[in-house]
Amino acid sequence: MSNSSSMAQFLLLAFADRRELQLLHFWLFLGISLAALLANGLILSAVACDHHLHTPMGFFLLNLSLTDLGCICTTVPKAMHNSLHNTTTISYMGCAAQLFVLFFFMSVEYFLLIIMCYDRYVAICKPLHYGTLLGSRVCAHMAAAAWATGFLYSLLHTANKFSLPLCQGNALGQFFCEIPHILKLSCSGTYLREIGLLAFSGFPFWGCFVFIVFSHVQIFRAVLRIPSEQGQHKAFSTCLPHLAVVFLFLSTATFAYLKPPSISSPSLDLTLSVLYSVVPPALNPFIYSLRNQELKGALRKMMTMCFWRSNKLHLFFYRTLIV
Image 1 (tube, one colour):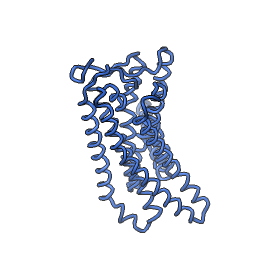
Image 2: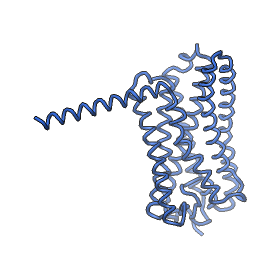
Image 3: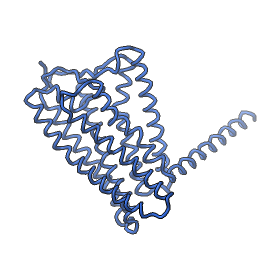
Image 4: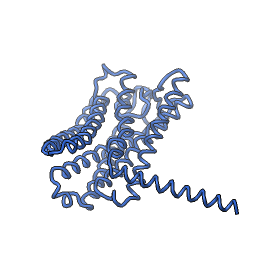
């Protein structure tokens, strides 16, 4: 028997027992994190440096890239460290911080996806009112509301979960600190109550998903009226991946948090956690950003400028050495 006041650390789930598989997981996560860091770093640089991207969508893409970086950097480095050093421990305060930060960035990301869906709805269905409905002040207020709501939502759940008495040991059974596995360590009298609270607090997320689906239905109806097949194909190829990523994130997260304990298994829990915490942040730069023609043009321009300046600098040093 133990409780939260005396517990010093938690034990995370190891990806594998064999050293070769642990190193394989390390290199796999390293590749995913580097790709996400590079893609989101390029997006942040392009949006910040190119004034043509200082639009509502560019502003929301910048915020989305920040949340993607936050999600990846919260769970993946600790998992890589554990795989590389063959350890599974995380401190009590480190677990609380990881849960808070991850829940914060994931909540903000979901709210941003809703705002971006609204942006596309206004741009396609109400183009004449776009400047009025999505002015710079309105965009700033919506982004601030997303960050503030995510912070409060994360603070509420983290404080609530880590105030529970823990009576079932300290082995989490997950490669990062996740709410369902912390609840499994709580005393039996609080488990069902907290699951009910978690399910109730998830209703706003599904309500927002209904709004996303409704907005996409309106977008598809407007797109089908476009006489150009090329324009229809472009709109569908942009909107459908957005809807698929949102559904993947929400469905896997909901199932991971609310599935019955009878069907829980380490492999299933690990798969679900990767699908909602690692895959969407890694895919978002390619689905939401790098398919954008204006952003791709800004990236090419930025890369060309960097290449030209690099060559000019090399030429300067070469002439200096010759002299």
